[in-house]
Amino acid sequence: QVDAQLLQHELASSLWSQDVLREWAWNPLIYTRLAGSSVYTLLARDFAPLNERLGNAARRMRALPKLLTQARESLDKSRVPRVHAETAVKQNPGLLAIMDNMIKPRLGDVSAQLRAELEAAMAVATAAIEAHQDWLEDELLPNATGEFRIGRAKFARKLAFALNSPLSMAEIKTRAEQEYLRVRARMYEAAQDVYGRRNPGTSLPVHQSDDERQAFIEQALELAYQDVPERDGIVAFAAQTLAATTAFVREKDLISLPDDPVEIIIMPEFQRGVAVAYCDSPGPLDKGLQTFYAVAPLPEDWSDAQVASFLREYNSLSIEDLTIHEAMPGHYVQLAAANEYPSLLRRVLSSGPFIEGWAVYAERMMIEAGYKDGDPLMRLVNLKWYLRAVINALIDEGIHAGGMTRDQAMELMMRGGFQEESEAAGKWTRAQLTSTQLSTYFVGYQEHADLRAATEQAWGDDFDLKRYHDTVLSFGSPPGRYVRALMLDQPIPGPAPAAGAAAPAGVAARR
Image (cartoon, rainbow, N blue to C red; front, top):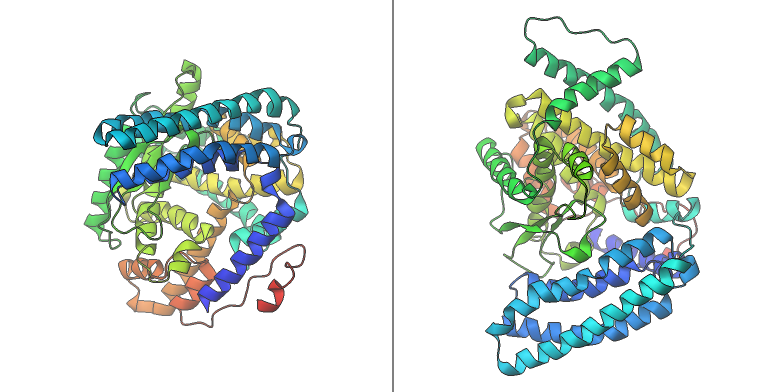
């Protein structure tokens, strides 16, 4: 029943995306990522003999001229938002880096015939990529005048498809606004604990106004900003935090851990410009292969001021929180467990809110379990990260459905969320490039938090944290409402209501 509903939902979503949203006509990034991932995924993991994978890579590189030509023919330059064109200009050269970093170093390990085939294919691909770069810079960018906001009606419809949740857009906004106030109040309490631990025997200052509380929290966060990794040491420090978080999860026996390997890598160039880090798990058919925790290095052309701002945001404690989210016990653990679920369809049609919500839940759970010995500064940083998820949902809806301006978004992120200017500016760009994805963190966490509370009540004295976590992750990655029904022996819920226009013809009856 669950798989059938997931398939029907995906069909309706795909038809709507192709026929109504029509991103293929205005988003050049989908072609850049398709071109890059088509070759990158063949070489990133050893899922088949090297010669076979390289041969397939050669065939795909020979197909790049046709793909990129069709991309240029499909894109309506006047509908392309400028921010999408600018990002495509930056990402497209990363396709050349795939060949430089992943194919050329392997040429000495193959036969002369395959080497000649690869060199010829790389020459074809290089010419196509360079021609596409010229088109991006000379034709697309000067004429990219499209609107990046998809509008309230399309946003509501896309959100319903993306979330597959009973929560409406209005309910999500109300919850987020309430959480915004609650989390900021908890941050003030954590800041008081930070002050008390560092100033024993002194009375806590009393702050009456919002401005005083704001300044007090900012002063406490400054303590975290004093401990930062080296400019070129972020990836290495992330590896240290992975070891530390793994040891803590094992010590506390919080969840069953997979045997699949996890590896920290430098983010491929063609993927940069949207997020600081991501988890790249093996595909649904892959067993026992690496999960990549990809971290973007700092751009070489950044000024000292830009680097300092970034490292304040991604200080040592923040990177520990990031590692919990992306790897242990966040995405890496959850997605490895999901890949063991026997339904191939469910592994393919995974829920973004369930996946992102689990990672946010993992951050909160680790703090509650005593990570970093209950350090209130770690708790404060963790609350700041959760507040970021709350604000993500607010700006996602505010920008695409409410006309939120850059100044308004920056104020909410920087003052409201205590974010550095560089982080807020990057999120503003990400919010323009995407829609609905930023809401998945908050909505997914809300569903996980609701499920945890309902399960504690249902299991009573039999509730055990490890048993709960293992059970939650035993059903793959379907939307949270299905996991709740499966865990608590409830009837399988019907299709989630989709806001906006009616479903495409032929789909509503099957649903």
